[in-house]
Length: 508
Image 1 (cartoon, rainbow, N blue to C red):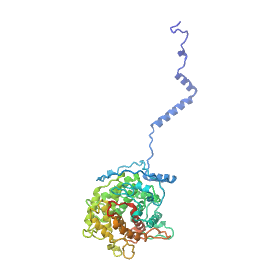
Image 2: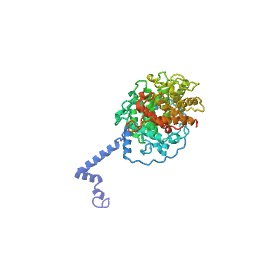
Image 3: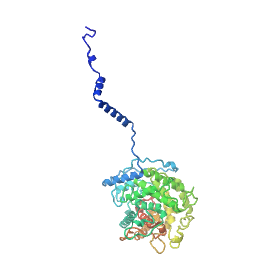
Image 4: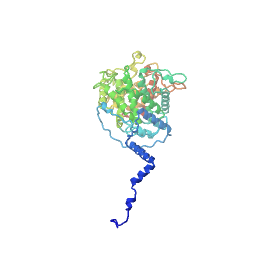
């Protein structure tokens, strides 16, 4: 017997190993080896390839969003939950280019209610709660609610119909690229063409005014019957912005006006739509305004020129106040800008009359040189109205600043009157006057509103002509702005009921 106790070879000596079996099989089936190699290479490549989602621009984001909305049926708006009121903390940030930090264009947009395609989203209480600044429509924050329903404060069926007709006219006369052509809008007319062209150098500012009219009735980038008009217009304005933040070109003495009005429109569209991808261009536009102010003073036609005027300054204050109201979305402004504006208005105010001057203390409003006789400055208190509105936006209170009462008393003596013969039509004045007197409240507002509704609603063009819903540009600045300008301003006058609740809560 052998050492193993068995005769012959052990069992493990006669069995084949796994490697030997596989080698034998591979000899018989070479395709198996090829398959293994191919799969191994594929797994290696998939493991090492870096995958990244494609980046999209603001334009593409809005286009995709529009397509998705068109494919989806309207949904019922959800009732939003009430959020506890937050106490505002006053900040005085220093405005620098660094504040326009890069926005990730892959950022997920905030959820908002879907479009119900009503004529005015303000007819829905839920919508008011969504966009109200400071806690719902007519909220309690420093700037109150951004919008409120108008009938209680003086609006009515006639005003609502007049506003609807005005917005319809503006929508029909918008260019396909998004702008309103100040001197060429009549190319969209059907039948008898509209009259009243303005100056073509104002396209940026006039487009901004028209957009504000739509935004003032609750149409945003996401909601409303005219949301497509808002989208096209905002995209066009964004395309006009240069690297410095200026919207438009430095042409003539009016480019600061145009830039500021366009900036207000972009800021309102950004904030009311909760469209965060617009934050960077909006902040750049606001920074340009802030950087254009003269040190320790205000604004005029050219950045830091050393000259100041009360009109450009008024528009600048509105733009800054709009940005400040959306600080929860990352916009930043400097309190020094508001202080500089108030210092200027104090300097321009005649303490005896309360009248605010254009470039000198207590001087009358400006007029085109060739129209001084046709539109006497004595018929208007436009600059005083600008100053009163600016004081409200800067946080001043008539109860603590008696000069505001003087402003209001002066304005009350010259209410809106549509008289084409005596030169009293001043739509610019009526626009600022309506906002300022609404803030004053009480008899100031009630008396002004009664006269304003008659002057504005009764003078609107009716009938079946293409000009139906618009206003003839027969005011002091009608030749410059044209029919789009006049129609936009008159629509904004009627939206005073919705656009801002009382900022301070003055007289009741």
